[in-house]
Image (cartoon, rainbow, N blue to C red; front, side, top):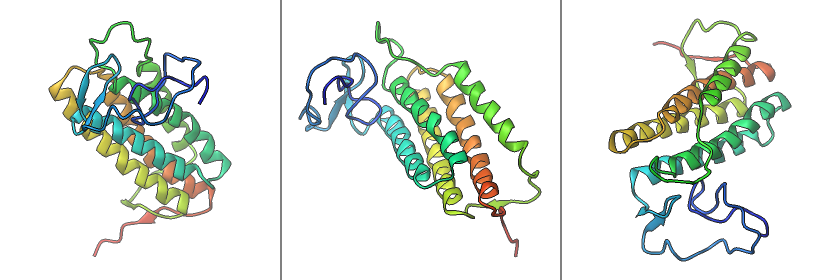
Length: 204
């Protein structure tokens, strides 16, 4: 890989988003063979730490969104694409302790949260109000987006857990919470676009 970001053990555990160096790098470094990895800034932690679990789950969410995006209608792809880029920002934010100096890493900001809120409002304006409990399902795209929603909620729980142990960007929690809500709405919108109704919970 030439002209790609220098690996710093961030979003995916192998590649990240800053300090571009025009050099050929290998995908494996062997530095994690003892069960530790480096955060941005150089601090080494165990791969089973809450911080690694948190941004690793964000990476899992991004992969799930990639699966949901594959074969989805254009209207849904247009909503997913910017989210995948923003999740790289979230992953880098979580992989960079707040006390790390001169990183140049972009962090989640109010604007990211506000954009997700605006997208929720826009999509909900096109949907019928919810009058019953909804089961995950409907079209294949909607079902995949419901899986994404549950992964986002797991990422949220881990980020909250991390925030109890270390200082983090508090906007990370707001963003992932709002993103989970958005994915619920997006799943409903996918059913709407594909001519499928919400799957209603049938109370016994």
